[in-house]
Amino acid sequence: MARYISITLTARGVSCTARLLDDVAPRTCAAVWDALPQAGQVYHGKYARNEIYNLLPGFAEHDPGKENTTVTPIPGDVCWFRFDSDDLGNPGYGYEEAAGVRERREIIDLALFYGRNNLLINGDQGWVPGNVFATVVDGLETMAEACQSIWMDGARGETLAFARAGED
Image (cartoon, rainbow, N blue to C red; front, side):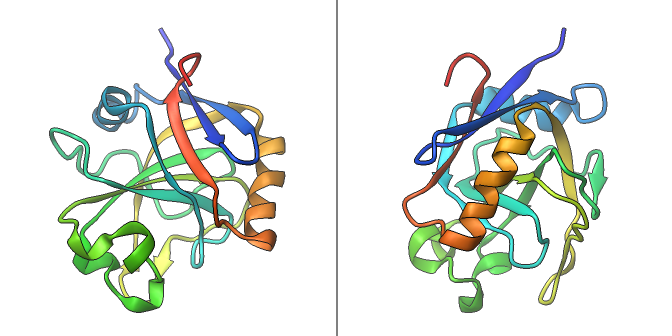
C-alpha cells in the first residue's frame, strides 16, 4: 500500500503531496516516515537551481546510506542528503546562525525539486548525490510558484514542513 507525505510552506499556506518510493528507497523512506513530522527554516538552492530544502538535526536511528541516488533530480523529486558540520560549516553558505550547523555532527537535508535542469554539484564538495525517496503526485504547480516566491522575495520567516499526509 502506498504511503504519502505532505510538504508545506507554512507561512505561505501552500502544500503538495508526495508518494514515498518504498520500492526503490526503502531504507530512506523508513527513516523519514518514522521521524515525521519534521520542520525547519526553508532555504532555496544556490547551486542546484530549482530546489527548496531545510536542514535538520540527524533523526534516523541508522543512516540509510546511498539509495536510489541522483545528481540530476527532476521536478517533483524529494531527496534526502546527509551532511556534517565539516560539509556545511563554510561561512560562505550562511548557515552558522540560522541552522547551527557548526555544532551538529549529523545534518539531514530534506529537499524538494520543483523545476527542471537541476545539477547537484557544489564548488567545495564536488558531486552531491541525493537519495530520491518520494515524488510529488499533487500540487507541484502551486508549490513551484511558492518556491519561486522564496527565490525572488526571500525565505525569512518561512518554514518547510514534512508530515504524514492527513496528519499535518
